[in-house]
Image 1 (cartoon, rainbow over the protein chains, first blue to last red):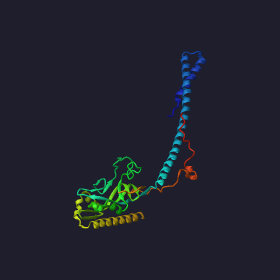
Image 2 (cartoon, rainbow over the protein chains, first blue to last red):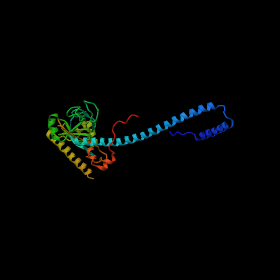
Image 3 (cartoon, chains in turn purple, green):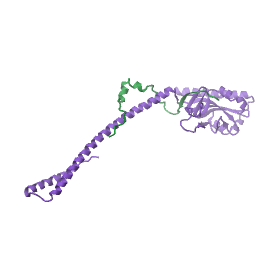
Image 4 (cartoon, each protein chain N blue to C red):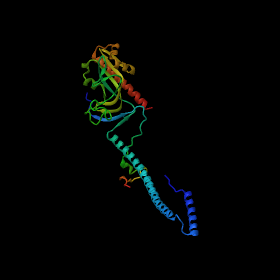
Length: 267
Length: 52
């Protein structure tokens, strides 16, 4: 706020003072001079106080400009420090970034109602991970060990063979083998992944000796919603042959997906 | 199935622009980069502002 005295008023007062001075010269002592002296004194003290406050105001404004400048410089420095921490952390933990999904393989047990993973039933070709032991606190999948050594996330293996051996698929009977595209935060392990999001992009599924092989997203969704659709497909009587057909199909689809991804990224 | 030990995190972001190349510079690198150092007018007084 810019404060200044009214110059018109000051001019008017000066003129009146001059008249009073003339009257003093003319008539000597005048009436009402005591009140005038009081007003003079009050005015002088207010003017001194005003001048002091104006100087203080100027000093504060100067200090505020200086502080604003320092804040701006420190913020720029802080931005650099933050970026430095991010860079060092990414390098230390060899964090990767990809515009294309990571591919992995999954197994489900096939029932009449649904396809069931180790922990959860799937209701569509897409699954978003939740942490069953620690809730959805923080970034999922957790990587700080709060939910165990392996932790949360949608699991997928890097290759089919360990899945077949690890889950004794010959003993389970009706199983589905899927190629999944993993997105969001994906945690790579020695032989598999844990991901925030997964989408089935190819599916081989057997149910009562019938075998379905598809990479059609709508059909994948339909089969996951109603696995009995698999029974519309041809039968393969030998269990080993069914597993081999599914493995060959999803691996071929994985090869095709990787070719498409590499072709796209080279454009 | 045990998928083994955790190795690294990969962030998959589809339909996004490729981020700027991640610089390997660190705070200590700035000291020898005159142009960069000029952009950050050091030294800064990082002490709390004096009470008025």
